[in-house]
Image (cartoon, rainbow, N blue to C red):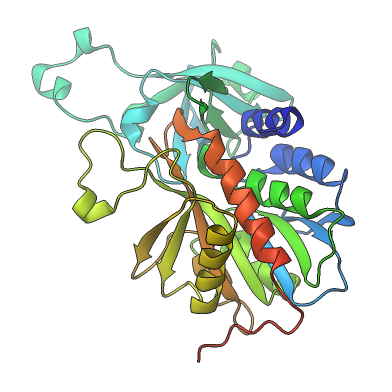
Length: 355
């Protein structure tokens, strides 16, 4: 991974941006895109667009979501402790003992998630799993008035966990799901900059995927740009660690390259073009079955407007929806190369209707 790309990736991962509050990573994404894209813009939902060859055909959308899971203040008690709810799909056990960064109206507010000490619990309570309603955020305030001077009900936050480089080209951080998708689509555009293209290619950093039960920014951005073909980049569960039943969940490993989905949300012609591009570029890949929903932006893009021919490329990731997710950097580079090869191979008369 080139030094500039790695530096951009780490800044993007460290920027707090839970669903509905993606402004900080979105600004970094647009600033980076401005160095090589023909046009960079955003819309009312916070989706970000970076385009090459805007007059080309077909109109190609590369989509990766900018948001991450987080938490939100729902109540401040008289002692200044914050009750909170999760933004997105959390395992409540992950919250216990974590540090948090709340996005307060006057700037970041740091705190810790509190829970009754095990020494003070009754025996039966010690054996129970923690629920969010049993936890609170302690920001060091002495009372409600002091707390409200720093945070308000509705303020979001993230668990405090920064990027850490590990051996063998591996990286751990919060927000890898799916800030790396937003990174990959922009890196693919960087690879295409200055190249002769038939297609118009737009990288899109979408919003609110983690809570996008009605489509989030994916559906609105696909409709806004009137995409004809889309490749969604997200993460999928790596199954190369202890206790995973590969017969149920498939076999996907760090360093194994991108994972290509097949299923109802995936257009057959797009899938075959991705396979052909991977094999031509000698990019290792695996295939994941998605017989129902993919649980990604692809579910909302392929039915947007009049319908969009959609593909899904995923990066294997361990420990999803935790403050220490883990990927292999080489898989990000391979995914970006695959998208760029897919776009270069498109002619203006490319068709995607089933035959």
